[in-house]
Amino acid sequence: MPDTNPGAARPLPARSPETGRYDAVIVGAGFAGMYQLHRLRGLGLSAIVFEAADDVGGTWYWNRYPGARCDIESMQYSYSFDEGLQQEWRWAERYAPQPEILNYARHVADRFDLRRDIRFLTRVGSARWDEAEGLWHVATDRGDRVSARLCIMATGCLSTARRPDIPGQDDFAGATYHTGHWPHAGVDFSGLRVGVIGTGSSAIQAIPVIADQARHLTVFQRTPNFSIPAHNRPIDDDYEKLWKSDYRARREKARTMRTGILYDLSAVPALEATEEERRREYEARWANGGTAFMGAYADLLRDKAANDTAAEFVREKIRGIVEDPAVAEKLMPRDYPIGTKRICVDTDYYDTFNRDNVTLVDLRAEPIESITPTGLRTTAAEYEFDALVYATGFDAMTGALTSVDMRGRDGLSLAAKWAEGPRTYLGLMTAGFPNLFMITGPGSPSVLSNMIVSIEQHVDWITDCVAWMRAAGQDRIEATQEAEDAWVAHNNEVAHGTLYPAAASWYMGANIPGKPRVFMPYLGGVGVYREKCAAIAAAGYPGFRLSHSPAEAGVKAGGVKAGAEAGAA
Ligand code: FAD
Ligand code: N01
Image (cartoon, rainbow, N blue to C red; front, side, top):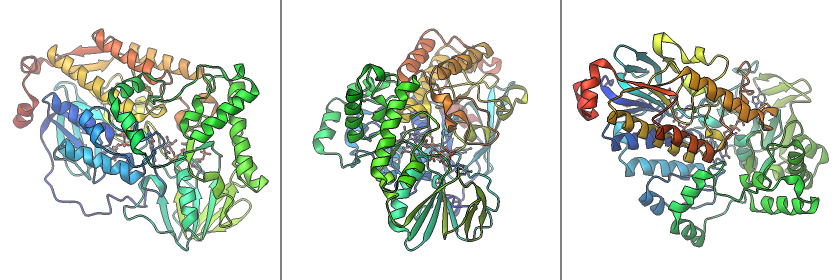
């Protein structure tokens, strides 16, 4: 992507290539990679982390666009693994803005002394399993060639920013940006005419802030989105105290919830309530704000008639907020059930279309023909602007994994294996790739949850598994084909019992031309999934094949610390 990779714009600090042998290579230093490093150290294992950016934080390092913030309350969108950490960190706002979350990630890196094992500005290009040695050989773009028993992909579900192929896109004479690759120094749009392509979560957060700054903003919308107001506000001391007085118990409860978020999920079907009761309920949730709106009734994501009641409520809100009825009509989603694309959470999104300096272009009515040197041409008109923002999303869930040349047993390529869609057992491992773990991989609840809850659960499971293997004198683990097939079938069955597949969403791979349409995250719920994973661990890992490398059996059974192994490499 020829735009603004903030990290790559800086000079690379000199360092010698790594050539050692470790117990684990971890790819990525977002919340997943950081916590995994911390846990493996706790086992006395040696691990090295490679990270493409020049700092920790992952999502919160890259997505610096104006208005970027979390949509899960800050008191919940944070690590729970360390009581001291969660007690001492103070969130300023109900939904933390990106700089605050990035500061938090940096604080965690410093507090747990993580940076010394992270090699920044380093992209992993390939990872190859050697069956005879029982090792992964990992190569980076900085010349590193390391080997390790375990390769742990903490590469993120939403880390491969995607710019669609639009004719003429390299002809544009002004500056171009992608929300997922925003420049460190920020961008001043004052006095400029700006075009934004896309109206997903990123755009919905950025548009009101850009509109405030720019001389004129043109929003190019292909599919409207449902958005609920955030009602963001400072966190007051009493609220913080309430949480911190029993943080552990609240976190424990959140882990059992469908989404890993502690909020009021109704058990009542929508159509069992009267119209008046439903209105009251939706109004209360709209007034409270955030994704909890979708918890109003138990069957909103299962029953189309139930879903229609919530969708129509939001459409009415749009009608009430947006003054021009024609613009309001364009902003109303009609061709997919509410919640089946990730629901958005905004501050003043719909109001922004009442501004004189904002134009909405409906790309369904007038598709893009090409980007031009001065702007963009649709089938109906020519639009001019000085800067263009792609808010066009990600090659989600699989992009970061398949863009590494991953080779399992007998040279099997991960990209080839997943050509018809990702296949995993529990979203943690894939058959044919021994000792390769994925954190929040496809087939796990991941993007349908509070992701830090899901990350912690995966990291804890992987760490416990590695500890168990060590104690049992095993050093190889692999998902069996049968277990993987059964999990994929279960995943599909659960997904197709809901309304989710009715939307052309990135959950389905539908945002990438040619990507197989498979529902990628697991819809069984965080609590249920957690129980399944725990039961499998407790039963000695059925569905996984465990073995030991003959040459290493004596060493590993003796439980030699990996630091020694690394030193001997
Ligand atoms: P990431 O944070 O994506 O980190 C992965 C890291 O791996 C990146 O730093 C990347 O540079 C690195 N990497 C990838 N490939 C390679 C490679 N080959 N070599 C070296 N390094 C590599 N989730 C929520 O639950 N709540 C929210 O409110 C929320 N808000 C979000 C807002 C935005 C704008 C986006 C894009 C996502 C949001 N998410 C949210 C999802 C978010 O991605 C997760 O919550 C979480 O931050 C993911 O952490 P991670 O460590 O798994 O992945
Ligand atoms: O990406 P998206 P995102 N021509 O894929 C449009 C998380 N997140 O970066 O729907 C024209 O949702 C595309 O249109 P369509 C969250 O999980 C969270 O916004 O494909 N338009 C769509 O409108 C989220 O779901 C927060 O028709 C094109 C937009 O670009 C995920 O990240 C904030 C196009 C892409 O929307 C991704 O969000 C931000 C084309 N060729 C992100 N190609 C929080 O609030 C694509 N589009 C926590």
